[in-house]
Length: 153
Image 1 (cartoon, rainbow, N blue to C red):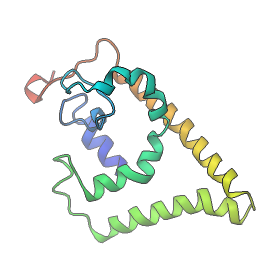
Image 2 (spheres, rainbow, N blue to C red; image 1 turned 60 degrees about the vertical axis):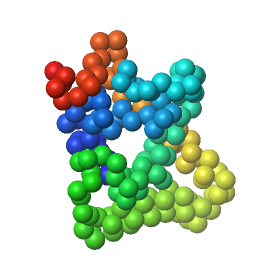
Image 3 (cartoon, rainbow, N blue to C red; image 1 turned 90 degrees about the vertical axis):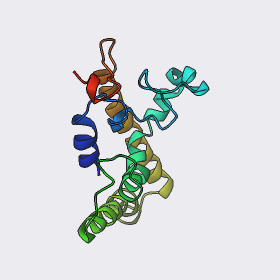
Image 4 (cartoon, helix red, strand yellow; image 1 turned 45 degrees about the vertical axis):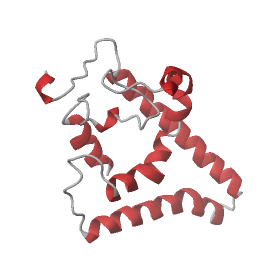
């Protein structure tokens, strides 16, 4: 899902309002001047880092499933996933959670709380690293946000 979302949904239409899925703030953030203002957006500079820290956890537990089963972008809607893709999604998630959470507890005999804490810490570091790198490349003063394909430079 990440490959599809990133290449088809972002790099094919960088900063294009309504099409670039990286500009979807899910109501939590306002990234472009074309998005409606909400009261919480005036504080997004305060809560952004805390939310960004959860970025990779969002992909692991929510976003992949949301885009797979409940697509909201036009480039995802016509996709009819073959059985193989369902297996890859569920088996991949199960494998990941097994080697990240279950095996350290069973094989290394570590406390479940220690393992869960390390898991969260890793995701916080990955989430902050990834989002801070991506945000700085897309949100400089000269960033252009076209309202539609006609405005695309």
